[in-house]
Image 1 (cartoon, rainbow, N blue to C red):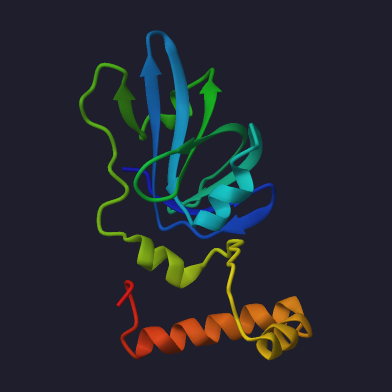
Image 2 (image 1 turned 180 degrees about the vertical axis):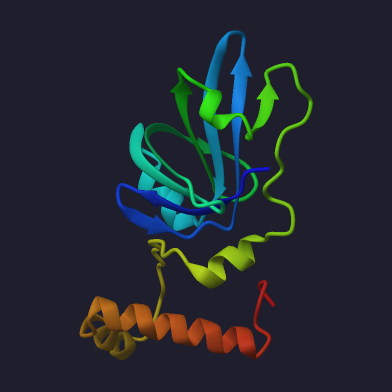
Amino acid sequence: MVVVKSVKIDGESIHVFNSAIYIFEAGTSFTLELNLIVSEVVVKKYKKVETLIIEIELEDGRVIQSIMQVKILSGGLPQLNLFCELDDIEEYRDFDRVSENDSWFPNIEEGITIEDIRKVEMPDEEFSIKLKLPIDQVEWLKNQKRARLNELFKEVIYDLWKKGYRDGV
């Protein structure tokens, strides 16, 4: 079995939580496929891109460089599916093969949780809230810089979670 050691997308190293690299056979055509569990940040960055320059370093020292197409796999953990057509599969003879008729498919999600992924790279997301507050508090909030308010609310929420105010309780 071939094991991926590291992956670079457009020259930038990404954190890979798990992966599977294999040859997909569909009729007479062959595709090199790389499925990756990555962070939500990585998925968001590449979800509107069709092709990427990929460098895959394998544990045996081989390096594969290719222009690959991207699919975002939905459901479950954040995943990228990278693939490219192969003309000569001879240099990939030690790779696992998956046929379009096979029931076997690599399960790369096993043993990984979204919490594990977020410990490595936590995405930030815009959130708006409408509050009714005393005027002095509103004036104070209006005088704060956005970055300071973001940090303030993060701290307050984490403090409340530590005190047990989680899940609407």
